[in-house]
Image (cartoon, rainbow, N blue to C red; front, side, top):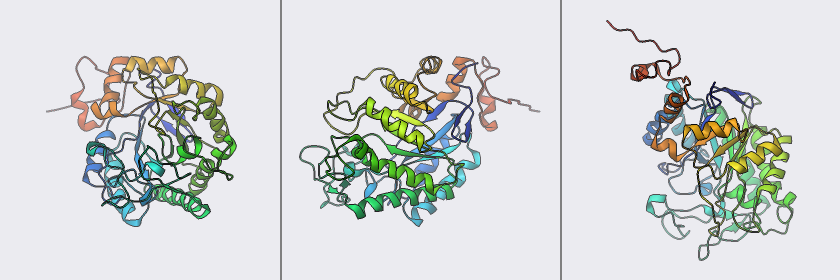
Length: 371
């Protein structure tokens, strides 16, 4: 039996295998509204046979978008547009679909990557003033954000809770709260971005306070059968920044608050980061979290070979494997992994005739008849 294709539990959600499609921004929404691209893109991925599909980082407010093209779930119009996509995709989906809720903080008001990804100043078309824990820009020379005051903090908490309620109404099966990659929740956690002198800055306990309040707000806004978990950057890859010891401490507090899992990534809060890229370079971080926190742990980052994914699980370094860019490149990666590892996988019966003759037991419940 392949570990990658064994079932596992994400909170109350039972999944067929341990392949996670990680959230990947498409920068193709209009005023936060999902478009035909999202229907095509998600419809394709939902047929992959992965254990679960996490849709792209979805902004909880207009100012929380990374780019003007970010998907949002902060208005009735956003909800209506995404409902059209969800109704069509879930009708045929093999994988359960969950959502990642996010706020970009000081990394907001940016160009799409194919336009260069630079900050759009607030006085230019399509730009807006960003908010953050402190008045520190992400990079030297950029426009400084506004530090969130008590009213601003309260708004962010309610924005996350409101988007969580909309997510449930749309039929999403779970919620991942984005606390990684240098976005707002990560900005509060990291001393690089958070230089507040109130109860939300300074000590580790204080820097964790607001992200925990946001997690609690999301958890309280949804029924018990909807798992809520977080994606974290386990290290900033900058001396003096957020690190793995902080992540373990944060994970243990989240565990006591009912967090269903931890999705372990890294980096993103500072241009000064120095990331030692190699296959599976973040796996040791996930292994440390799994060992010292004990929550279901998702490993991600340059894991594209099925045998490598299987070995990570066999070693007990993680409970599940996430792919992002690799899944865009090969949307049938789960099929190919199952074939390589001698496993079975769910596939739409409309595609059963594509089963290669050398893999006679690849598709579950396979049967084809013809006159």
